[in-house]
Length: 104
Length: 204
Image (cartoon, rainbow over all chains, first blue to last red; front, top):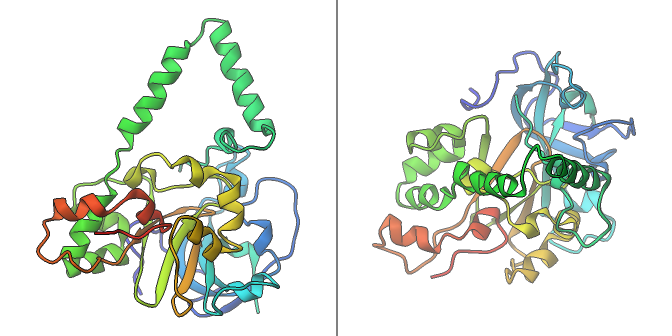
């Protein structure tokens, strides 16, 4: 699958579309683009967005190297909130950097 | 690459106490004005300039997609390239268009700050930046949508897209019945900003 024009190719990557993943339940200090509500949750890779400068480095004035692979991950709402009252097909999709993901 | 996360303005419209960043940003502005380095008028003009820099062009693109299935397919496959062929340069923004269907309703948020497809939709509305919307729409999207007057039937899946990193999003709403034969200009008039964020539906 070729990536859209705006994306940067990610030839070396750990996950592919459809892979089951878990977001690390880590709580490091500093600027993170992984919201707290999704840490420790399981989802499925929805698409590969390509490689991007690491925002956790950019935030402190570094150049963001090495770049990181960015994925979109789909999470089922019922896996996120104990009392979710909507449809069981309802989902949330987020962009998660590879170093925050583990196989699940 | 640039990150337009706007942390200094995140909570400007929230009801809670001002954040550290907001206090810092206001103090900085007051100092710069007090020392005569900038004027309040310049700040106001710069904010107006933002609107001019990022005009609201989304409805033209979506109206075109409604009338041209091949263009819509290209928009869904590659939002930036499709906008470029339509004469709209999204610059650094990477755009993912998500399509509403009879089975799926999409809605967009940035839970971390206020990331928004500015190059296509201009400046984000106040409610989009509110902590209330950002916190609740990922937890109880159907309740939030209902507050906007949008009741999503149980058999339609609600998909919330958190623009938490480097992508920006636009919803492609379903073309309403009763619009056969309409020109793109007529269609664009019913394509509201809120429908492109996914909190409302275009109405005839």
